[in-house]
Length: 360
Ligand SMILES: NC(=O)c1ccc[n+]([C@@H]2O[C@H](COP(=O)([O-])OP(=O)(O)OC[C@H]3O[C@@H](n4cnc5c(N)ncnc54)[C@H](O)[C@@H]3O)[C@@H](O)[C@H]2O)c1
Image 1 (tube, rainbow, N blue to C red):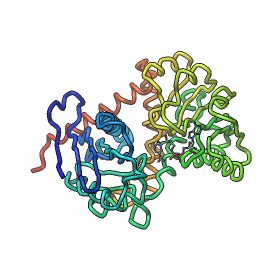
Image 2 (cartoon, rainbow, N blue to C red):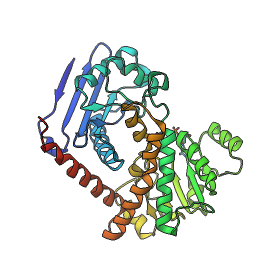
Image 3 (cartoon, rainbow, N blue to C red):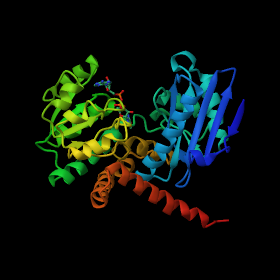
Image 4 (tube, rainbow, N blue to C red):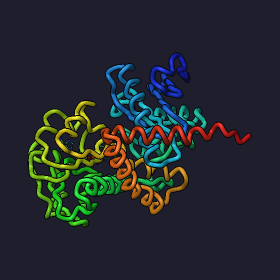
């Protein structure tokens, strides 16, 4: 077992700390990335994934932990940004001892990093990790956790979409708008409900027959189309990517008929230049990490003892934050993601600076 805090050249990535964890007996190989604790303990999930190499795992954790710092800052949380990756195939190596070994590494950071679920880890896994560490959130309801975070993720996306609609059409109401949802999974299903309640028309697609059957039975008024290509080329006002990352690519953006994009999927921009293409086509993109923060808001609330109404109130504020970002982008003539980054950096600097007022 060993913990290595990398301080070789922290300026190259801007991270405060990167911790390599290994436990040979259980097969655990993990990397915890702490980008910033300026706003409080770093918070972000644990991704369990069979990376091709240690370099690929490291690159992912550095990238993801930095992203969490910006997401948490914009969500108004008292949390910095962190993330962890466990390198390996969860189907093959996930076990109680491995998760508990990982939990001991999380505990050894003394609260500088709080973990939660991500790709390849589930609430039941967090319950196991929590047997070794106090710094675990995203646990099951039976273990004092908040449970499924997609409920507030969908609520937050809905709020962000309303703010974007207001910027484009002068009213946040989605009544009468045609909204295209790609991905009727946990988030997409809840989002469909909010949109229908608001009077929007929903057109959607999914690759899963089960998801389609559920939608047909629950919301027969939803129009289902064959695939995402058909969805984006159809006559929609709003496009909501709720499946995988990279949804806004060189094939999609040129044919997209929507005027607004607001969805739950992480890392929707396939490459940085694509935002310029969106702007040139007059399409307003509400940054994914702003509008999909409802999930992290939910797990952050759990740290204090989960209160759904309090967390929902905070997720509702995604409307105000999105509005402010879009207004700032307009004012300063920059893409919304650049405006969002500036706002996050300002909060990290202004609030983080207060730590120089020492309390003892
Ligand atoms: N659940 C959360 O709290 C949360 C929080 C932040 C971000 N996100 C992101 O939002 C997205 C959706 O999350 P989720 O929890 O609903 O996941 P999910 O796995 O429950 O749902 C994803 C859905 O997308 C469908 N899908 C996959 N490929 C597709 C394709 N090519 N075309 C159409 N549909 C396709 C799947 O069949 C599935 O139904 C993910 O990118 C996730 O990372 C989720």
